[in-house]
Length: 69
Length: 402
Image (cartoon, rainbow over all chains, first blue to last red; front, top):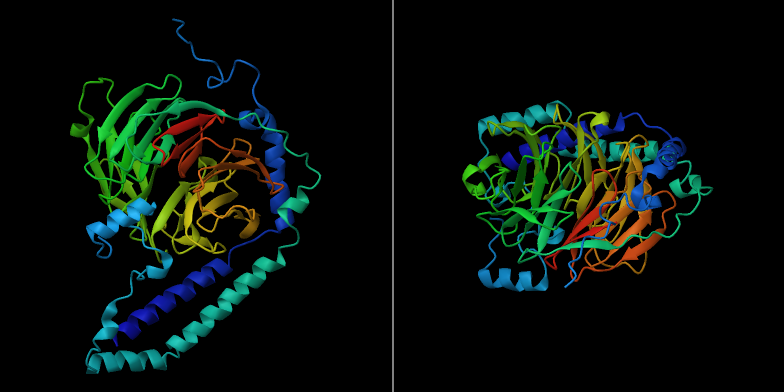
């Protein structure tokens, strides 16, 4: 009996969760995709890993000082 | 400890490269299922009454199962209705990414064993990393100096995070806890003395992250839950139940998007949660195996996942579905970690075949493969200003790429 009751309450929880997920408001993929694309293109210029930065201003690309023996 | 694994078995599994404490999907006993089915309880008046009441209310396991099946079907149909185009079709006219000149710029050596996790400080130069041998090290990425080192009382420190202020780090692993260490300016001070235990789970800690301040900590665990903690008091503020297996990763939404976070786990699901209510608001299950890492797209409208099935996927939250799969037939090893570049155009993914693949998020193709690590890549993270990214590996080193 105990196992049936706990399965029942698990199922009730699952059904409630699914109802919640089913009620989510959705937009079309075409709209979502074009907004993702728009963000990428608008910010491409600032993306150092994508376009690189003007020489010298990326601290990791600067050569570290070497000791000459 | 989960299961009974002998010391010899642990050693064998560790040699094979597998974390012995992480049960595979096939071996898993589902948490929450009591094994009461082995001993039937006697039929007593109260349980009979409850059973009758359940039948009277028209609810039975069978009707609930039917309802849940039809809801799942409805969910799929609703999602499919809006699937009018693929992301890469929308991005057809976008120019291809030109060849990237990314290579290793720094190699951070100092850990004695597998590096499992790392995190950047907001100052874009410091990093914290944690390893299998219990060591947590804070590095200056520019000079390679080790600024702090702490030895945890446990091995397999799977999670570490830098506090937003830069004044503390949080870490944990097989100790089932997440502890916060304030970083002292005095290099001689013993960090371990000031340690504060914040989170307590009933299984290993897989991920941790500070929220917008040093005051709250979000954790994920092998016990199948995530939790939000108050750092000062150690109080549990909210717990998040819904995963049916170990949770392996979590990521907070960018602050502008509000109070949500995403988690991924061994149940192949990625769940989005409302931090205030504890509610699971969206759930995605399209991977074929454990999800090792989840990471939000810069706007917070989408997130990427990395899985043992060898693929990375992009899920859009507003379309409520998977919108891209980053995969190749030649990639047969699991992906352990992902992160986006600043603009969201590039997706860096670390794999168990020792490589890092760079994907074009919009077009779906692989732009390049980065070689250098000599063992599994466990973690990749782009720096806060997007000028570089760091990778951690089982080869005991970290690399900074730019």
